[in-house]
Length: 81
Image (tube, rainbow, N blue to C red; front, side, top):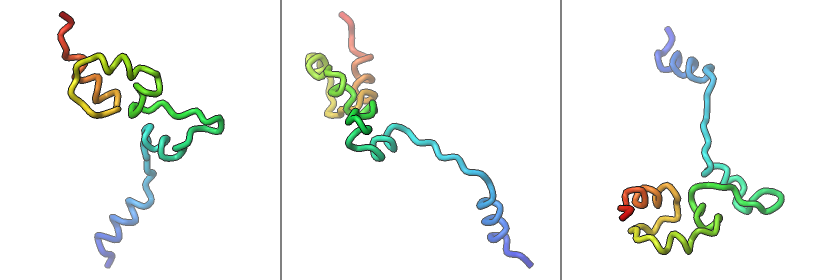
């Protein structure tokens, strides 16, 4: 008689698997950039890479993050007045 765990394990091991990687994996794979030294455009550090640090520094937001997604949230809720 087969163990139910063994059946499940065999079933799972024979199924195809999908792994979704984001820019974080790419940044980890090429930390010094591509063969030309060009860094990957990830959200973390994106403001600095685009040369927008001086623009962002003029906006009154409360974050120490360099991640564009973290910065955009507070900026989008600021009043335009």
